[in-house]
Length: 499
Image 1 (spheres, helix red, strand yellow):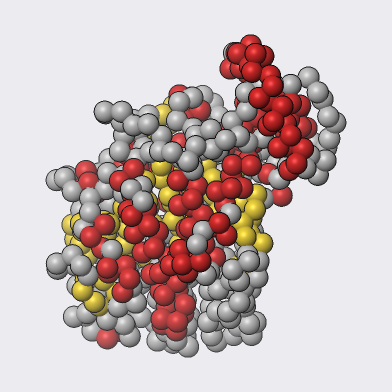
Image 2 (cartoon, rainbow, N blue to C red):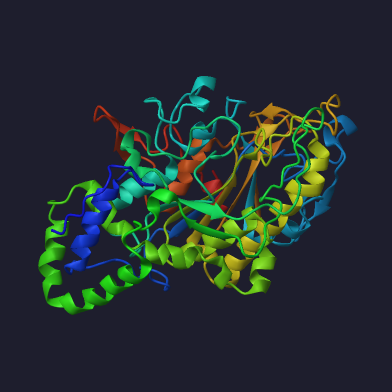
């Protein structure tokens, strides 16, 4: 083995630079490389799960149900607020007036108005994992031993056990636009990590290179003095996604040298069967196998290069960070990616990009948050459908909770505060019903009145559509089997069937 010495610095998915370099050396000697990502759909057989892939959209800070998918136009002003409701293409379905483009693709999605749980805090990890209980201290302790693995990490783990689902050259679990909560001044949040499965099951993080072009409406209009050029609001067309620092090729392995190795691989076909057998026979550690997959990151770079898209397509998604992240997610899925997450996540002072509208609620929604979401989300759903990818791509759009029915008129611009007893999420593709509504809330949007759906039910349903029974287990640190979605249950209502 060509053993190039390097530091023990950990890379984006928990392996070391040395392990990556060692794999690079093995590849140069002729081991079969997975660097060519398939641009064709993975072959599907009768009885296959409906979802080949999943795009997980997480709106950190929590959008209000009233101004999005569960408006209450007949409620008093202090409940309804300043924004009304509009019709959609689905007869009888009305959504917030700030989502006119989403109204036009409502026949391709399922709206769930009855999401509910017990934790009106930033319980990202509770919503993204199967963990049964939560507390405020866990919010900012992503490596606490009580944490459970992220849904994408579980899919990664289970796929590796089967060794049949991963697309060549692409990690199973990829996340955009940057490591969660790494670009704001707010505290680090738990959620999208491998937890007790190990750091090697953290998402394969990207990073963003570019500057914001628009000043976002203030998160706190009462006291915020900073003017934040928020990339979620606008970016230059030259902005780009890259692999995060730990996922880049080493400095001493240039792209040209990497490409030269690919050329050399073709000259060692005779040696491949023996070396492939060695790689798959258990002689490699899981970190070495992960490092071997990372040598194929060239295919990820190709998928992340949104500048290869026509200007019209990029404009369709919106020239902002969320929109271009959604476009990159579509490109990754099209290249064969399995689980891609897009986090609309804090940027700048006090998390100036999040949906946590404890102040300046209506100006932020009307002039920034809703227009950006409306354009980007509707473009993603319609683009996937136009390309024949939606039926096999589950798209989950959710957050950690909802917001209070009663408007707080004290802060400038109004406010809605944390509320988890009733909120909304949107689902599409991968077996989800089209033009469907699940659940209902009371007259003020504060309590679920029918078909309560928990975040664990959401996960159980997603796992089922991705091919894993809700009773599937993963081992905790003591080797005890834990259900992948905790106490969640598959909900046929999301597929248009009776519960």
